Length: 91
Image 1 (spheres, one colour):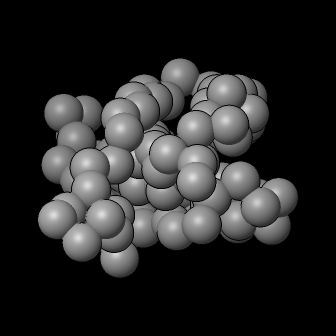
Image 2 (cartoon, helix red, strand yellow; image 1 turned 180 degrees about the horizontal axis):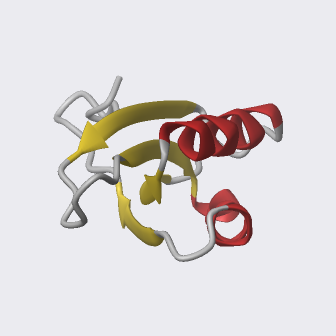
């Protein structure tokens, strides 16, 4: 079974975040996408964090897609931990 990876990207603007999420989902690069507004250090700017769950093999393609589509956004990745029942915590 492939390892699950959580990828987080911070994007300015709700339309950019929605378009990025739609493109990622349509391309089959993530099994789960959550979008949430997060505090911004820049006054008057709305920042959105996308939390995506994908497989280890899709991470490079997903990260490249995010960086190409949302220039200047931050991207982080980390393995999804497993609980005692061998199910990912996000299930």
